[in-house]
Image 1 (cartoon, one colour):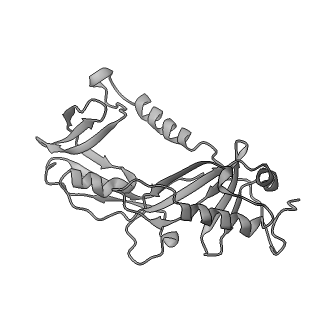
Image 2: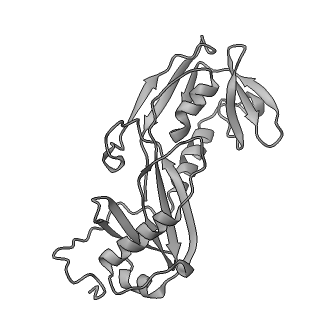
Image 3: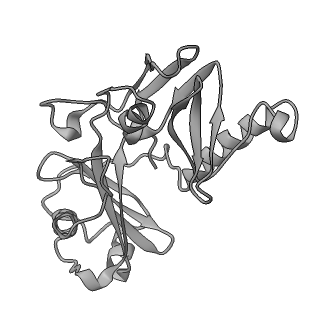
Length: 239
């Protein structure tokens, strides 16, 4: 019932689980659960949520937190510090004065296109398949448009991640792999975005074959002698 599919395809399968259309809501649920479990109120609360605050160093045995909006620094002490800053884990430890080489993040980009023919061709289904280069890629109908992704390229976490023109060409090629008769061009792009996966350092392993599992590493930090610092390495969730 998908007449636009490449006629050379021999097999397809359909499954119905694992669909999470708004994964950011999971992050908000975790945040709200933490706040609901807190004891006390105001500055005496055992859990508080802050935005635009970064760990900028250590001082007096505590973590220096910096308010990015005002520039104000203040020291926060805790028995345990969990460094869960994703692909920037090593940069956070470096800000603490520690040298770690845990991470080997890879860049993943996506584009969102407005193309009614492509949207109709999906028949409301995500297409999840192996591209010519062996990578698993996707074509995903999303709120009246189509999301196309993704790439897997070694990335420097100290630099902004951006979707390049070469990646756009890659996306057009993977669509043609499945729907050879549908024409896509840059005028159809309404949005493009890019991020870095928090993958562990992987040396010679090709990015697409690096484990998405995670581990927790006890991380000695000289500036926090009375604090247990735990680094979360790897792990991700996806739609």
